[in-house]
Image 1 (spheres, rainbow, N blue to C red):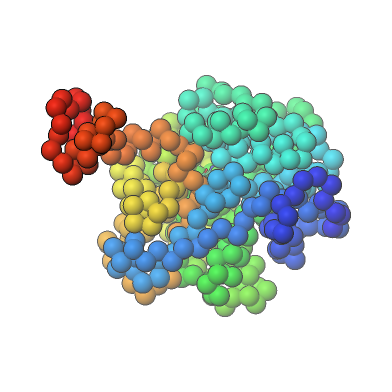
Image 2 (image 1 turned 90 degrees about the vertical axis):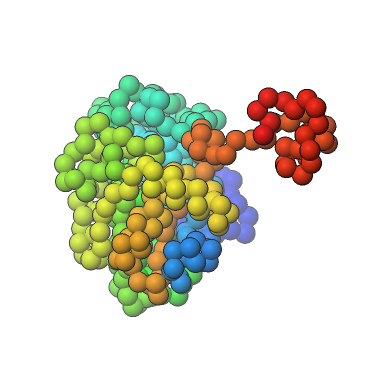
Length: 371
Ligand code: F0G
């Protein structure tokens, strides 16, 4: 591997360097990194107690450099683009892929163009993409329209596509499965994961299989994929023309990796099912309140699905279950605030603050709406 020419995180290997023997890297692939990967696998004791599960784990991918799991695949896709002397990278995105492409593209000194569904991406993701310096095109359509447009752009112009149809993306993302096995020193019994464009479930499955082939683990998990109920093409086995869900990250009606996800489900003996927005929001709130982990709504689909299966008696209490929390809650402050308890507004006096907290009698006059 050539030495790094640009900036790099000192003392952190990055996933390319750490898992190079498991990835399609060559002697020309740069050791490129923003410090992605090595995210915590949290043994969720409080949530586990609530659900009657002894070994429930949360893989907190929100702790990646741009706040989502996308960084694992993007670092490799962009490193390969550097190797190929690419000048521009492009993608369609519900927001996280865009933010990740914009960040790694900035580090690589490349032009980045992202096409997003107008009005349908969380504000934090848009802020990131713009600040990392990407050209952001907001098309008046949904994600599936954006992907169609970006595919046409790659046919007409000399640019590198970094959506998960780029095989390097899935190669990088499978390192999430390696880390789960490295932390548990075994494969989990179940791996629960949100499904949107269906790349991540396919990548994790490939990672688990590769780790078993190399003798790092003996078993394989059953893959549990969860789509949002209004955007569940795989569950309904038909393209959804107008997908709907508050979890905008997975608001996708025609996933690019559909067949791979179905293969992951069937080969592993798992399921792909759907969870409603209400179930997603309940799980989203529970994870932050019980475990101190603030994930984005789409991420909570993994936990929502596990909750649903546990309540139906479909998961054993002794099973090792890993839920992937794909992105940070800070990405989507609008949904967070809309679903949160209100703030206590008070006058700037100690009496008013204590009254608002219920620690003292209200002084006169109390501000309207203070309690
Ligand atoms: N969770 C989050 C937070 C996501 O951003 C995505 C996908 C998924 C889950 C689903 O993963 O597509 O591999 O099945 N976001 C893409 C994007 C589509 O453009 O950022 P998937």
